Length: 102
Image (spheres, rainbow, N blue to C red):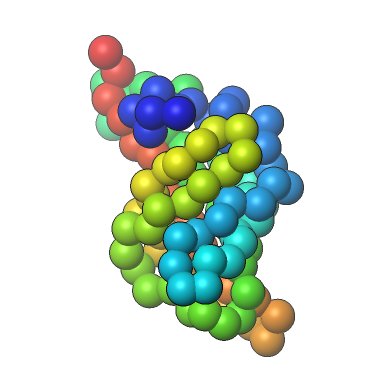
């Protein structure tokens, strides 16, 4: 799926699914949720402005960067992930989609 075409509903449909992060070795992140962003500036398309949270293992720890992910239904996606939380059992990452209308 083309990243430019993704809307929140596409990701709502796969909450709970695993996305494989390319790497050595590859590992999975689980999509926890997709949430609309709070209202933003004029011209922001609300259906295409949202954030997603992923949960991954404690190790490896990803740094804030762009990663290639693969999903069984959506195919390959390249997302900028930001680590936002960590505990003994794993780490949580966020990706934000914020697009203008039209």
